[in-house]
Structures are given as C-alpha cells and as structure tokens.
Length: 291
Image (cartoon, rainbow, N blue to C red; front, side, top):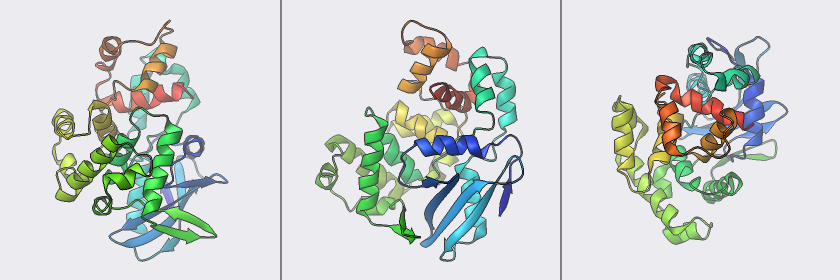
C-alpha cells in the first residue's frame, strides 16, 4: 500500500538516520525497514520502503495473524509522524539562521516516534547518562529475554514485551543483564504505572496540557525532566517538549552559535523559550546538526 504525506517527506533521509541506530525493534537493509508488532495479540511483520512518487512511502505486510492493513497504516503514520505539518515548521525555521543549513540538507526529515509507551519509558530510563551503543545493547538484552519475535527469511524480528511481562522480572534479573539496580527499579516502577493506567499512553494524552503532563511524569520515581520530555516529545507528541539538559542539544548549540564552550542551561533556555510549539522539531533538527 502507498501512504501519501501531506507535506515534505523524504524516506531516504529517514532511512539513513535509522540505519545508524541500533534499535533491536526494527531492521534496516537494502533501503527498506522491517518491523514486527503485536496488536491485541495479533502479530504482524511489515516492510517500509520509498515509494515511486514523491512525499510518500510504500508499506508491504509480510506476515499477518489478523491485525489487518488499517492498524498497520495507523502505526506507520504515527511512527514516522506523517500527520505533522512540517512546512509550518520550515516557515518558522527560516527566521533562525541556526536551521538554515540543516533544514536544507535534511529536507523532508520527520521525527521517528516511539509508538509504544512501554518502549519509550524503558528507553528514557536505560538511555540516561550512558553512551547510546551500550544503551541499545541493554535494551536488546531486555527485549530478547522474553523471546517474542517473528522469524521470517531466517531472521528474527523482535517484539517489545508488555509492561505486565516486565513486572515478572526481579531487580536481580535485570542486574544480570548489566542494567543498574536503580534503573531496574525505575523500569519496574514505570511498568507498574503502565499496567495500572497512571502511565498509560491514553492517560498521558488526556492531560491536553504539556505542563500538566510533564508535572505528572516528573512526579514518578525514575522519571526526571529529560526522561519526561523524551516521552512527551517522541510518544505523546506535545510539540513544546524539549529535553533542555540533553547533551546532544548542548553540543549542537555550541556548533550553531560558534561558542568556545558548551552553553549553560540559562543560555539554552533563553533561546528555547522562543521556540514554542516548534520546540520538538527545532530540537530534532538541532540534533541533526551533529550528523
């Protein structure tokens, strides 16, 4: 099936970004991306590739236990943030020279979202204050422990375990995966929140206010401002969400503003406060300044 995007979209730019990641939940090869998911227990494997026409992508379902085309289409639209008005962001970006080169180089690049709330919560905890290569490896160990996958053409396509399944683990189980004791406790706490509804995707979306949703998240043990903004930016899609303390964002400001040293939080906050509802995409493109 062909999915057309209302506005700029470049699958090639997206693919190049995804190829450099090491997320065990999707696989890139030959300019195509494959992912397995489970929708209410019905597993599906699909492949995303560039469409022949501009501003579009092609989705092929390779294996389906009854999930159906509609849910896959909705998932892909969410994953690649296809409903976002990217042209409106570009209009904003034209007023700031920081974005001049990067929006031209990565024209059509959109946010790669975390559709699954359990996935983003786990990642926002595991990814705290460690290098990304090791963080991806820890995530792989955690996912592989539950052995949920679709095997297709000799390859395993892993599926994220449910929050309730994570609760069957002990802290010591995760320590054996080299996840720190504190992070293991945080993961279990967040999994409990997803299970009881206090951290469900639907509940977080119901706030309707970025500040209220952020206050709720940061009130949860294990979720600081950085983690909260990752969740609100990449899953709930509050467009104001900016992880102010992010090391990559700090490094990007050092480059764009030609600073001798990394800027402090006050310097960054003064600029970010003017981004408003374009904050999430401004952050996304600032990260691309780093390559």
